[in-house]
Amino acid sequence: MKTRRMTMAQALIAFLKNQYVERDGRESRFFHGAWGIFGHGCIAGIGQALQQNPDFRYYQCKNEQAAVHIATAFAKFKNRMGTFACISSIGPGATNMVTGAALATINRIPVLLLPGDIFARRNVAPVLQQLESEQSQDVSVNDTFKPVSRYWDRINRPDQLSFSVVEAMRVLTSPAETGAVTLALPQDVQSEAWDYPAEMFEKRMWHIARPEPESEMVRRAAEMIRSAKRPIIIAGGGVLYSEASGELGQLAEETGIPVGETQAGKGSLPFDHPQNLGAIGVTGTPGANLAARAADLVICVGTRLSDFTTASKTAFQNPDVRFININVAELDAFKHAGLPIVADARAALKVLRARLEEYHVDSAYADSILEWKERWERETDRLYGLGHGPLISQGEAIGVVNCAARPQDVVVCAAGSLPGDLHKLWRTRQPNTYHLEYGYSCMGYEIAGGLGVKMADPSRDVYVMVGDGSFLMLASEIATSVQEGYKLNLIVLDNHGFSSIGGLSQSIGSEGFGTDYRCRTESGQLDGDYMPVDFVALCQGFGARVVRARTRDELFQAVQAMRKDTRTTAVVIEVDKEMRVPGYESWWDVPMSEVSEIESIRASRADYDEAVKKERHYEVAAGRK
Image (cartoon, rainbow, N blue to C red):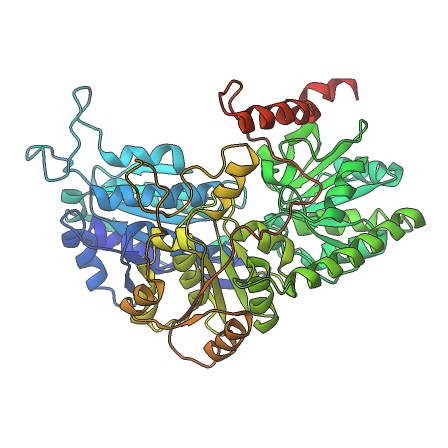
């Protein structure tokens, strides 16, 4: 057997360079390089290996958490067909990545994390940044990755690598099991050499399967649909990952069944598709939520049914409602006691379409769908042109950017009140142009995520819409976008605090406590003047070109101008956080204090006690059907 003598780190990079994926006859490299910051736990091992492999590009992030966000956004835009490796030293560099790992795993997005680790040989312990344990010599801060990784391993000997990397690839390329994969790399082992089998470094192709649905389950699903009077489809992220938008659109149009889109699934259909009722759930449109409330059958396609999608199990109020769950993951296919179709979304929809010939919803239901769509388009137009002042509304800002963006351009967001407003108001025209990280709703994702999207397809304009709260959490990758020459369009909305949580606080009777960016006064409270944060200066300091807009017209002009720039450009505008886009026909379970001395909280609790009675327990009731 031919061998190559290499260090463990060199072997790892040589292996990653030669991993490819294939689906539907299309091949592509899986790893597009590595992000990270060098420290004493990785510079001599992985660092030197990267130095010797310039064709596996190293990218210098400014924060390790941001590196994982960049990789996740890239992989999400690539429909999970490509990603990056993320490296760090042992210690704070490693634990900075834990948040990113959780985000990737919750959203089912593949990323490879390679944190440095403590010495395997132990004789020099405790080394710098080492967490000591009285119970074990085999504990480090990298153990914190275990609950947020789909696969975790520590490479304590160089010969272990060849076994672990194959398992890592198995998970990363699995549509059902993918997420963060962590290989903890002790810093001494990274530099140790071993005779690796030469076959390990040959090109390896990983086939991304499209599991076919079981015919009996499809037959049952078709019977359920044919007997339904008011069915609705929920389109989740799995529609996009499996590239099933075409099949979904045809099925909906042929049957007349309306579609509601989750945050991850928005863009599955164009906003003007006749059956697309838009966003569903707590951040949904009135038509989608009214259709869900009365539905006797809910066809879930590629969604994990999070509480914002299902409104904490209050959205579906028909006493006889049933569920069909099309999902590549068994965990999701069995939720809500639904009929499980464990399969690729595109494959399942294609087979299901063939069994629904001549089925169509009745004319009364079809008329309702048309009326809901027309009403929502009028409401969107109203919110786009509200004319609120002197500070404009957030909905108007969204309208300005949406009208400026081309059909193929991408909007990126993650946390705060913006995701809810974007979910309702952004008019998508093509798949993968609405990029919201809402599985973890991680503040700080936006700018790093925008960079990942731009790297995945530099031909598109990327509009990063970010509130001041999220901006302050992780704005450093503006500098990286300038450094790498990937131009972003940043729209920074300044509303002096945490607008989303402020609104939620008011709705539960807490009057916005602790959600404004105000200075502390002699009263001991944060009730003074707003903090004088200069977002224009911050953007300029990171290397972006930036303008301040004060009116809707100035914002429109700035957004039009930024399209012509070749470097990352930002526009900062103050918006009225009290002028919110309303909620429509939905409710979210956020318990407040059962006893309180504050009257507004007591009143909110009384309303909550009534609303929570509408929650359904589908799994418990399943046996009677």
